[in-house]
Amino acid sequence: KPDGKVVYEGEHFSPYGVRRCLHCGMYYLSPRPTEQAMMELYRQDHYFAGEDEAGYGDYAVQEQALRLTFRRLLRTLAARRQTGGALLEIGCGYGYLLDEARPYFGRRVGTDFSSGAVQQARPRADHVYQGGIDAVTDSERFDFIIATHVIEHVYHPEAFVQSLLQRLRPGGRLLVAAPDMGSFWRKIMGKRWPSFKLPEHVLYFDRETLPQLLQTGGVRQLARMPYPHAFPLPLIASKLGFGLPSALNRCSLWLPATTIAFTGVKGD
Image 1 (tube, helix red, strand yellow):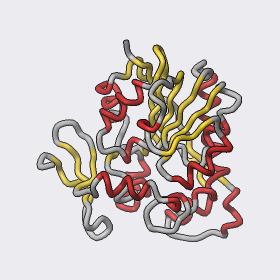
Image 2 (cartoon, one colour):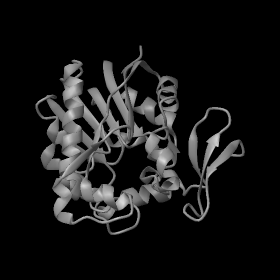
Image 3 (cartoon, helix red, strand yellow):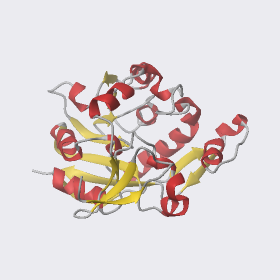
Image 4 (tube, one colour):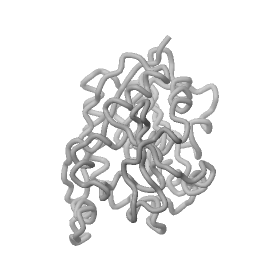
């Protein structure tokens, strides 16, 4: 885009840069790989197994921390009387959230592009589709759709939000969460902020641009959702530049303000 002001670039990012749109304030990766190239990456069995620089170092190592995070999120949704019925999770990974959602939803369905992740997730859900939202059966509708740490990967975010709404029943709810570009972590860590995650993250959201996208896409009754996130201690240490024994992976630390999340209702 020619209308973007350079925010981050240099050796750490080469050949990429992070720019901010002068019109809407949105942050984005520039240049970025083709969408087809990224889809091929996400489809790899080992995307969650740490065999490449891209993807996750070892997603299974984060299981305990992720389950703690999802458990707290689901309890918050239940306290707000937003659970029940059929749940769809986009980008479900190994299915930890779907498994934790068992007491809260009568049907739990997920999607993921990675065939390896789909195999891991299927025992933890009622059904898991390989692919994105388009892989879900056309006639299937849901009471709640969750997409956590997915929207920052999406090349056409408004169309993506609209496709999620099409899968909701009337009055159904949507939750979208992403790394918080406006957080103090990003400001303190600068170029070392882990959620730049190049080149997979092509968009970066904050508390203004994420609800703006959802509203434009047709989501109504938007509300900010608390989203504290737990991380394994060795993972936190590695991001800060030092190591801890892997035996401490079961020790998790809650970090505030890493993630921005909003819920909303399907409009008429």
